[in-house]
Length: 90
Image 1 (cartoon, rainbow, N blue to C red):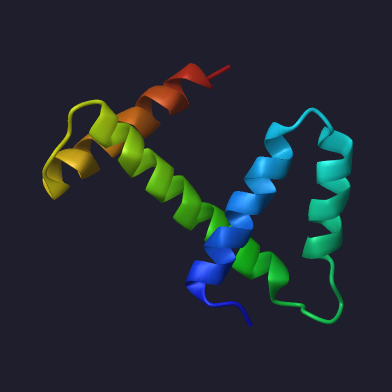
Image 2: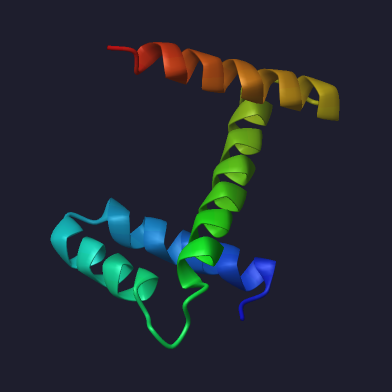
């Protein structure tokens, strides 16, 4: 089983693949990772790792927007997510 750090590194690698133009190849690789019968917990770990990565990136974005203290970072992160959710409304 992967440690949280190893899982988050794997999430970074998956995102790096996804950023490339060959999305079909990235999707196939991700699907293969998620359905590994030798490691049935992989899907759960992958989701947790993506959440860790998302949180890390969201905190970085909040800091780039000027948040400095932990409280400000959390408030800015929540506001960024609210704005994103509104922007995704149908």
